[in-house]
Image 1 (cartoon, one colour):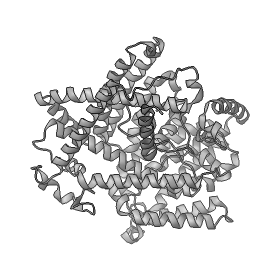
Image 2 (tube, helix red, strand yellow):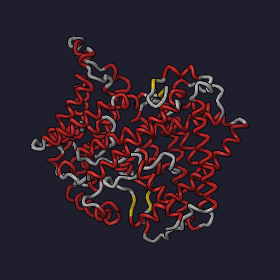
Image 3 (cartoon, one colour):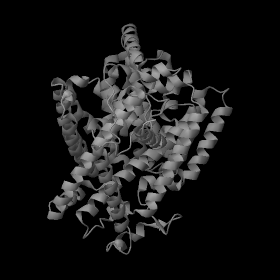
Image 4 (cartoon, helix red, strand yellow):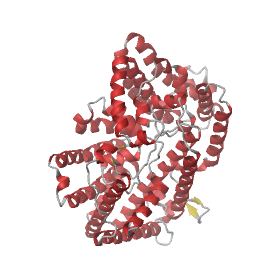
Length: 577
């Protein structure tokens, strides 16, 4: 066996261990794309790639050392500013548990695990009961535990959305999409302004003020925050129903033709006994399936209620009616990978206190390299925490027999394309957007315009803040040139050029910087924090650092190219993420 094949197998194993694409979830690659493409020769053991390995290893050492240095009370003069955010650790003296989102998950991990066990045992034991009824009742119990009597407000918002379809199918079917989107956006923006003012006291002129006591509010008082993810499911139900309602015969035949084309080109549909998630999502159900019981079973489905991944109503209901086969071996391997990810997260939190540094802006006197490492490690921690939260939720759903789409199907550091990054990061949300926004707006025909609408909505959905809006617009701004260059590359057949890999590597390296800036603005240090990093980069030391980091980024992109070529050599298909 060639030595390069051994190197390739090692890389493949590491990908499978941490971030492989699940076999039970819709795979976004197609057989027909690679039929006529000649399989390239491996470059793993070339002199060129040994230079890349050396650069990457040196960069990994510098990032690790810098992260440790700024987290040490000995070498960080600002340590006293962040020490109060650190907790006592079990892998070391301190642990940085200051990320509020992950802290909520970490602090309640045992409770969530116990809850998962009880839920799945009851689900298994109550098979005689109609499954939709059990899921609805279980979801209602969890909702009451979370929000207490404030659950009434969430249910009310959900009922308004349901009655858009209930009344719409009788009186104004063509207005269902417009009314659905209007209600979704109005409620999202409205709750941002007045969510904390909605109470029994204000709605009853004080007569029901006793219902606002903490004893009736449940474990989590801010119910309007949880509403965000429910909006996506509400839109999915209404629009899936709308697609099933309008011209059912014509739609059915057109869908059947489109599905047959997809099945012929989809690797998963040909390899598995059941069709992939895309077929389940795009195939309309019988109209009586879009009822109020299925609606609330879907909206309140406990494993995915708080965090996702997002699954469409058609896909969810299809699996309730005809459960798909998910092997015990796959679920066990998925659990092992989840536990490994949690252990990696624990080690990072015990050794790098970059979240606390970011929260307290405790970076006075840091070098450009230190500032870069703080930003990079914060992004890495955001990726890893979301991966863990989403995988826990998806594993819960898998144990219950529901196959939700997998998010995070590539490592954050294995992306050079803005579009591919988005497809692999929040993959289930991307599939939702393609079905309910991108295609209705004209698809690829208006791609450069659609991305502005899409990422503005994504920003508003995440949080109605300036930093998120700037993030959405920066992503749109940075993706537009990529779309234009991809179009020109295809038109000029640039892949046949001898220098194509070099040019693409340079463009990919620039993309790494642009994506990092956008995500630092939206989810990490905000606009002011990024301005501090950029100001630091304009110094002499900063310019030297940028030159070296760009060379390293170029090396990383070339390795990413080769990983994708290796996937093609192994699978015979080219993935589009």
